[in-house]
Amino acid sequence: MSDSTPTDAEAACFEAGIKFGSLYHQFAGTPLSPESASSLETAIGDAIENQPHCAEVTVEIQRDELEAELAGSTADYTELTGRFLEVEIVVDYEGCEVVTRMAMEDGYPLMQLESVRDAA
Amino acid sequence: MSDSTPTDAEAACFEAGIKFGSLYHQFAGTPLSPESASSLETAIGDAIENQPHCAEVTVEIQRDELEAELAGSTADYTELTGRFLEVEIVVDYEGCEVVTRMAMEDGYPLMQLESVRDAA
Amino acid sequence: MSDSTPTDAEAACFEAGIKFGSLYHQFAGTPLSPESASSLETAIGDAIENQPHCAEVTVEIQRDELEAELAGSTADYTELTGRFLEVEIVVDYEGCEVVTRMAMEDGYPLMQLESVRDAA
Amino acid sequence: MSDSTPTDAEAACFEAGIKFGSLYHQFAGTPLSPESASSLETAIGDAIENQPHCAEVTVEIQRDELEAELAGSTADYTELTGRFLEVEIVVDYEGCEVVTRMAMEDGYPLMQLESVRDAA
Image 1 (cartoon, rainbow over the protein chains, first blue to last red):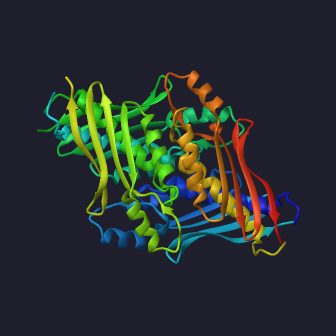
Image 2: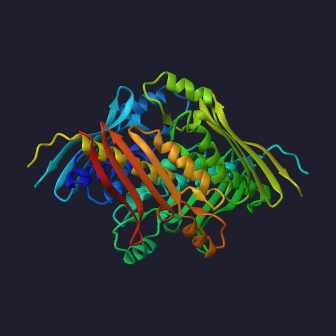
């Protein structure tokens, strides 16, 4: 069994996970329409970028998914949930850069580590 | 004991309460800094205005409270909570206009009915 | 146009709305499985009953809906959302008893005032 | 610069971070009193354990902190926030066991990687 002290790269990945969990569970359920999508994208990015070691957050609410949902509905708004979200978060922790992404895969919003680069 | 069928004015007040509870419990806990306050105000207003019968939502994050909190802290952000929020929501339900407000009173964020006007 | 000072019954309805909005937007998005449904029901009821003037909260997570959702999925959990919830909240404000209910109607979770009774 | 493909240990740390961010931002803001603390602890643990690779979640709401807060207040409840929470989460991902903890440090709720053990 390997040593148990976390490396900087592992700590960077932990930080990246915190950002994703925070983003999703803070904002899922927010009332959402085509008119409010843009300001919500901006606010989510700005809010999560406050968190430590968070270098960049890009949030795209999928307008085509949103329009399709509302076309099949009598309501003119819905709630933010994973299938409307594409998110990329870049964390920089002690020189390690971690790139993570959330997007739909097989009907589920999947959060994934894309790359871990250690400057050392 | 009076009749139990709700009046339009009572339904309008119920709707106004829903908006306040939604707003507070959706967004409380959001990471917040002076830099992200403006986009969060806009997004909260736009999101809650999606809800039925919601005529107008005005959200003001109290910059002075926020700056004071951060001045006494080693962090450069905090979380959205009631003491940073002043909110006015106007609901229009079947011709009844209800004006509601949230602001600090004696150290607590108090949600209050300001006025109920029935056009009938 | 009628007088604009809220009655006790109107304030009671406002309070009832706050509880519903709070309940929904605090807990929507919570990871949910058949195994965790019971403890979540209890915790939601206990949490919302803390709020002022809240006499009783009854939360029922619809097990049949939940099982049906998971049967059509490769995951073994989902997120709490309106279609899994039936809620009744009773508010007592200055002798006015307001009974409210949330349940699905035409595919939407509808929050409704059931009755408003003024003891006066 | 090292290779950028994430290791299992890094993926395990990412998963652990997701659980912490989820837990905090789903439940922060929940109305909380000494009477409701126990059912909320149970529900939080059960909910987060639904998430993939989550081996164990232990949540302790600090009763002494909660009592102290309420003693200095005219209210009989408050909101769940970091200073009332001690949490330990164990993630098991492809044979890597990651232990993480959240507790107060210098007045802030700090989420930390405790250990990363790779069975390989």
